Length: 283
Image (cartoon, rainbow, N blue to C red; front, side, top):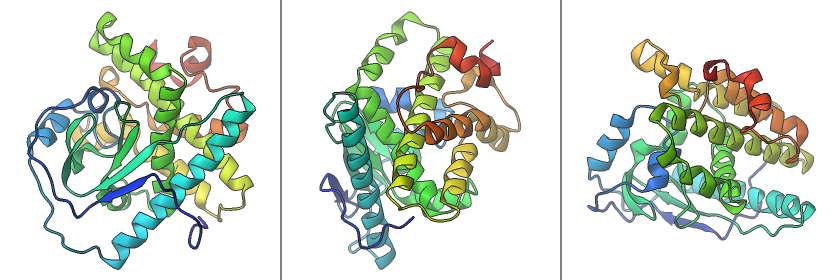
């Protein structure tokens, strides 16, 4: 991705040298939207108990560069979504993004790096420990800067869902559903965020910022964080009832669909007819 030398967003707060906090309790969006890393609730609960703190006193050159990269990607999301919202007679209000190390108290409660990147609707903020960039390469075998750009764009997708009222409606349904039913609804929410990330990528391509191989990096990352692949790697088994993000095929498909369309005309992952093609586990 062509990002160096370009303007970054003013909505990024770098708190990687601030250390952790000892405040417990998980926010509702941390629990509902969950993590790109794991579909196992015990992993999230364990991370909330872990009271880590950063011993860093300065940022390395690599750390600084990663921070600049994230800022440029966020700026691109602001540019793209401002334009798209105007096309639909809406006004885009940018999300904020916080970079942290190890752990911190967020708008949705205490979180550690093992939670992975997440969006908190309570303060309209994306939280990222950039250790996840390394995990994409080593744990998920999804290298490349555009793989990380996809992750950021996916979280911004949740912000789009918040701005359009979808996230509030989703949250209101939790008490009316069993865990399995709500997990299925969560899959639809996450696949829609993948679609929105694809829409963003299409516009970034139109702006001339994509390089050869970038699209493949994003598609590979989307596949790498599919529930089926993560469960298979972690336990050797696949349990569709515990899916919260969708299979590798589903995530890759919806990202690519958004990329091909480049708009919001076919973003409805909540329609049975629309999702059934890619959701064999829902029947």
